[in-house]
Length: 415
Image 1 (cartoon, rainbow, N blue to C red):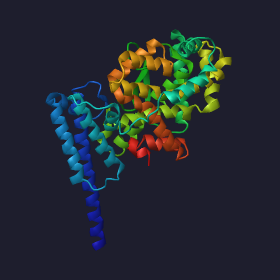
Image 2: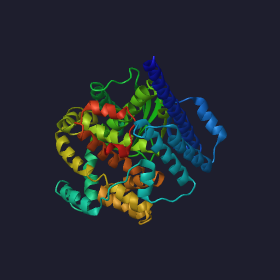
Image 3: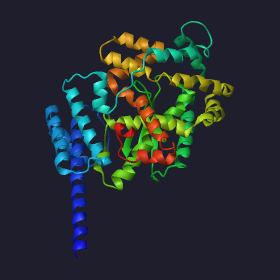
Image 4: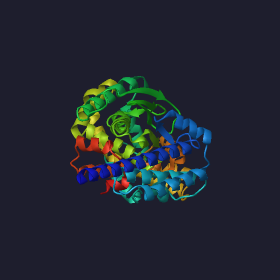
């Protein structure tokens, strides 16, 4: 009899804790929706109860009220929960702090680039600068033919690998179909998962995944600039498989539907979740098309469909791998621009000089920085953190699936 009583008591404690966490999760979702009434870009995806979004719009809490409610949620963690090591607990706590920080910024609080990225994304970019960039550029000097500034030579050289606009739909379809097939060989995805592709213009990004819920995505590809052959694989993996589409579909299936964790029905763009999302999406490219397999698929499928010379695919990738080592240039330029150490024109010049961007592409990236500020670290710092985490676990598809379908924070990846 006593054993039965103890079992019932234990069940009651577990139930009480679950109810408390679910209550906090609901308050968190409503907090994110409240901040979304001040910034249309903040809520990247929402597929929870429609009435909550309607109520948020009707109430239209002030930024001060949002910060006050956020502080009350954090206080509730201390008084109503008992396991700070729990991944769900940590996720909700840090995500709520990020909402408060974003509301403070929108209210006029000024933060340095690094303090902002720590507050919003739970991470800080390493201090990589011109010395490291020059080493990479020296290697590229030997591979890019011609005379004159390297950035101009590189831009002229890469044009031979641009996908003609009229061929882009069929090329992208081949890339994303292959990425999907490879991912589904290793991951158990929802049976109804699917996506729609649209081609758009006049955006500060190259592509975007708009997750709609019920395992459905809208993938938009920006055609303001021509797409390189290797980048079409990047887009297919990053926006689709095993990137954003898979990440959101797994969270919905494993955490919302199977566990009832309502907090994952909302995705606040400027939050630690974005570093996990962007970093894992970039990391997934190499897992899906590793080494020689990437060169083979480019030469056998992408180049012929795009009307490009397949005999140049491997040399093209050799250069591309070196150029990828310049990914941290955008952090360096953005940090200095956000911290008001350089002007807009100087930021653009840094991107041309060190990232080998054309002036037009550099201007687009500056507009992205102006709109999203320290968000830029989520790609390269995120990928670095994900790669280090995965290497410690053997870099298997199974480990990536576990990562994508569980509560994760950037700071937690270092453990």
